Length: 588
Image (tube, rainbow, N blue to C red; front, side, top):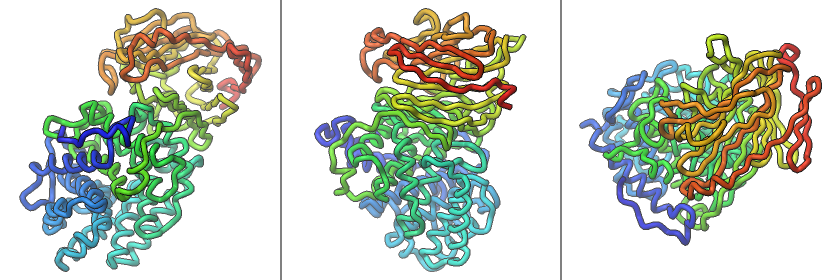
């Protein structure tokens, strides 16, 4: 990795990183891509796989331009813009044209935003003919149809810049209005947007759905996204653990530390529930976590994957320059050096529990682990990045032996999928939270209290069933029953409450984004009365702590009593909670 300043453990007792580290990382990332820039400066062709769009050179230019723009707008050296200015001379004649639902529309937004952020230093100094050609290229984003999801915000960003620059003003203003109006029906509540006319709740909330309205408001005064952004951050901030881990859930995970973008956006708009020290602590933790874990190649390039290269974390649209959407995280540099986010001592990020009825999620943060219970988010049925019942910052989905899955066992030994997820609600009561949903032939309920998550499923009486738990990178022979421990002392365990008769640990040799092989706790049995109930735990030592501390974990689970359509959980301290779970046929 490139040189970094010395750590400052007085100002940043948790990460050691300061604004100077963010600046050094930005400079290092920009320097690393320069050898791959074309002679005319308009494309950056990075080594690696080609995306389906075949616009990788344009992506390389646009996404690193955004990084340079944040750096310069935040007081960095103007010479960082020189190669991008050179690229603007020939770019409109070299870049793929913007057409309906094509990748250049995405990249046009990054180019427009970069020009807007650095207008006085770059755009205003371009030759008039160059400005005309670039404006004409960008304006095509106003005239073509975006994909019906977060893409509506790309023409809006282009429109915001062109309007400010006095180009194509009528079309530009209309694009801003269309984009903001289109995402409005997708607001589900609790600060969360679906990414389109579906129930896809994921990291696009932070690095798109909230980001672009926030930047439009910051740069043009258009709109007032602050209240929703603040509400979103109340729960989203809980999805980062104390070691800088982010949730491995949803698509485009190779954007990695772009997940920190909305934290800085909240500070920029003064629309955050976090203290300045919490904002920097979480954001710096995420950035450092990925860089320390091997996200960079030997040449200093961001790799396609998670910690390092990891094919299952990618999508067909992922190409060699895709990871540079992570540049969005450097929005934090727009906060001046004397802003409290950069001058306040780091503080621990928030912990706690949040039930989100709108998206149908529950988020819990215990410090060492952050997890999400999923009863409402789905992209396409069968996608492991959306279909699991739970996700965390210390685990990732497995494929050969699906983690955190429940299904009926077919005669050939295969297990049914979750099917289309229909949310049944979410809520909280004191130190407990719950969420429920229906799938194909099953009604499901997750209840979490402290370290224990109870997983309740109701199926047709007599159904053979299988429940899996959290997958860890570990030897499957590590422990008895459905219990496994990894090298950091993290424990994953499943305990049968009713409906299961066999407990074991299955081996997935392909592993997960955290490594291979993976070990997955499994329960199997016959749900004689239609009820299958288990308790799951994921906890133990914080990352890097001695593994021996995991032996101190004792899983105490509630008992369950069922009557008609109600299940009553009685916890070891005597506390009782009752929940309605209808039979699948009755709920259909």
